[in-house]
Image (cartoon, rainbow over all chains, first blue to last red; front, side, top):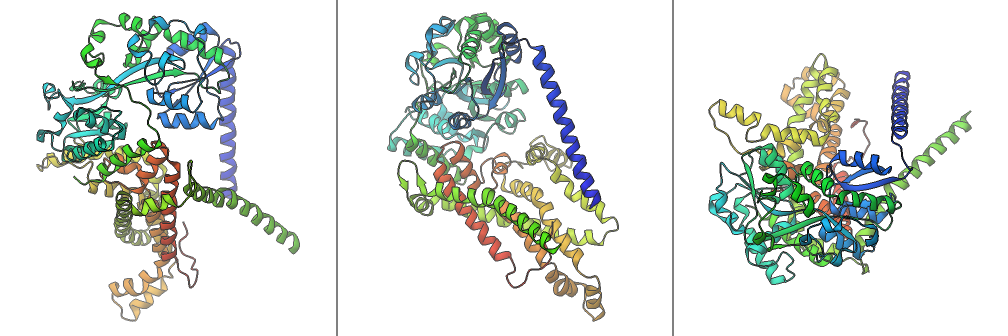
Length: 360
Length: 275
């Protein structure tokens, strides 16, 4: 009993010592950064900004940045909706901007306080989820496509989504675990829209999708890039950003966007209504809009930047990488996801669930 | 003296009761209310009707129970002989520590380690091809899923059985042998019945969490094994239909309560099953 008590006391003492150390470190760091006292809470995807940009911003602007991360749009939505923490800047994807706007979670942007908007590529402004960009500023964009192993698969065979159904790829395809994306690409292969809201079309897509099962090796999440880099699958349906990471790990991999069209996703900077430091949030948006900063950021993350002026500053080999900056004819065929209501979200997810349950 | 002691006990029970109320009873009630409260429609049993009339959800329920049953069976088959051996060993505390050690490591890390082991270029496949068998697909198979799940649950089965076996008076098996029973008869008629409380606790601590596994189904099973845990995760994170997610949660809790009721001795409480 005495020994047990001593152990408990030792644990408590250790915790107290660690807390003291942590407090000391934060205090000394706070002294180092000269500041106006305003701390901007930036709610972003994990590893979705060059950390040195934040440090530079802290130095030049005097604001301090508290960088917090989320791993799904839905998780971010829930957190902002529930309140608790006041986030000053968040980065939702396209359909989520529409959803947050509808739920009244976003503050209307004061255009007079924004600078550098001319630097942005017109292609990514004025999108269906936020006409006139009253609430959002595009950050990075990308596509849904096919990541494949050049040693095993001929990229020229992947001109259309339907190629995935080929018997050659039996038990070789990995799919990203996302109802919207997988049903979306099936709809595209049938010449329909990714935003199709027609029961017959969805049923037809589900029917076609179920015949893909023999080719499907696994349906996975973020691990997909790891599995592809390890050679676990020869083809995978995934996003360009994830593909980029996988290609960095394994040079045999390549990424392509089928010519029958695809999804265009856009991540955007928004200011939540509950933001406490709007001034600081505008300052950071404007900073990120600067061509030199945006170009540096794009180099670090490797995603396609929505900043036209920054794109022109990128090295030629990046600019000409057709997998990540597709040619205009492909760009014209990309479709942005519209936000679905509860009914259609459920419909798509139920269809996908039934597909997953279907035994191969 | 006695009075203060009694008061102390009452205060202690009161705090404990409040704790239970706030962190066990209240969340369960919230879950139940949530499952009956449809967004925009108010109180309704629709979720439950939908659940029990939908093919996919029933299939997932069957899957969950079937896989949880298999995982429990496999761990029991491995754990009982293992626990029996452990009680016979000299340095049993050390050996027991080795069994418990993996529980110190985060579940996700262990699962990722298995990705490395079972992968195409993984250790297992390398050894197989070195022995001339050639590589085979191990990841994303039902076998791999069962292996990893059973591995993770193993310590929770071994511990209660080990404790129950240790509690058995060594004179009883000795007497059984004296009276002419064979080793097998002793095991079957004396040791096994006496270790039952440990086995039951083990079954509970393995079967119940196995019902709602979801991470391993995706990472190792590649979503080729779909259980109710997957569906709950999806309803809370993707479709944001918390109401239906709660319904599945309630169904699972009922299934767990049933398991508890079936595996708990009602006649008399025995001292077994300590962890």
